Amino acid sequence: MAREPVQGGIAAQNRKARHDFFIVETFEAGIMLAGTEVKSLRLGRGNITESYAGPKDGELWLYNAYIPEYQSREPFGHETRRPRKLLLHRKEVRKILAAIGREAMTMVPLDIHFTERGIAKVSMGLAKGKKAADKRASEKERDWKREKARVLRDKG
Image (cartoon, rainbow, N blue to C red; front, top):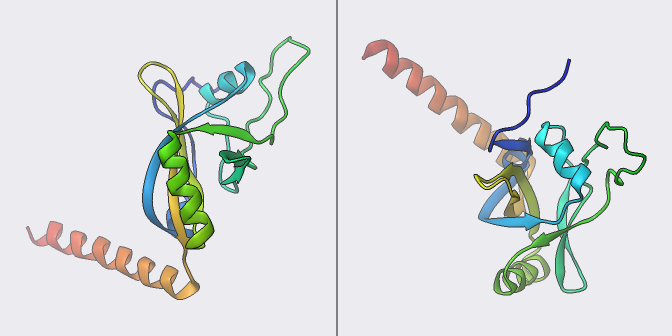
């Protein structure tokens, strides 16, 4: 069964990012893609769960993002896990590289989405890793908020 094309929405999402990391700051970056990669993302087939952004030659690159080959009759496709260049302002790149090097932070992709104009963008989070106790505390807080909302809804 064929998937419906993504209409200006999220093409790929990293749902584990907010569970595994404290997101300090978010950035929106452009991404350099090949034509078949864009077609594959428009069908919602990307996976960025295990990907991260890192420096290379003073620029930021997205590593380990999986975009499967587009199924077509064309003989050439693209490499599925190749590094992809992220497009940010020079000032933002300097800020991110300083935080990665000095404060032991990492850049985690939160989602890949399409703008109204049809341009692919990546929402990136400057993140600090969570420990197991932090994960349990945030899970406990989330459960408490859910229970509180349930009680207020039933009594109100």
